Length: 196
Image (cartoon, rainbow, N blue to C red; front, side, top):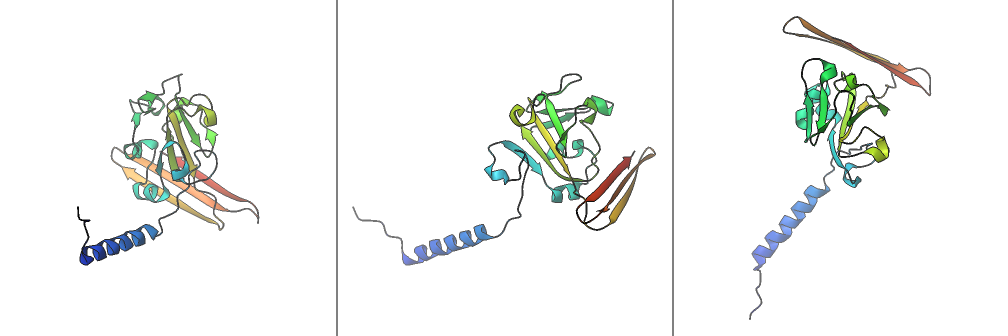
């Protein structure tokens, strides 16, 4: 049986295709870090089922609550009946109910223990991470279905602020205020407020 040889033209095309593929792979992708394991690391190195909504997507969508980004996160469903306190998150079909939380919500690493916080207003979100599956080892009880982690924008190094005013149908108004700046060389502050 004769060995099959690739003609020179085909071999050259394969080499060129490999060089192009390597140059595309070598392009710098934006660095993303998550804090799902309570330390900053790349999501590719974490052995968890994780969805991330980064700052760029949050700026594009301008969400007011977790409901506004729930359709971008696989296996996350927010049930909204009437009042905000009756809106419960479900991850992979496991969800919270009144008096029976199964999805933990953390804002800046602070657990939100009230059932009214499932649909809290986003004031200045930097990143939203959704961990699917039981997370009791790192986040304690009430995380059978998963955890929703919200990180806020850090305080700025220079004084600044923003004021957003939205008007919607049915005489609905929404105001968001953010003030941020340094207190001294080692400390800074950020103040966020919203009214609807």
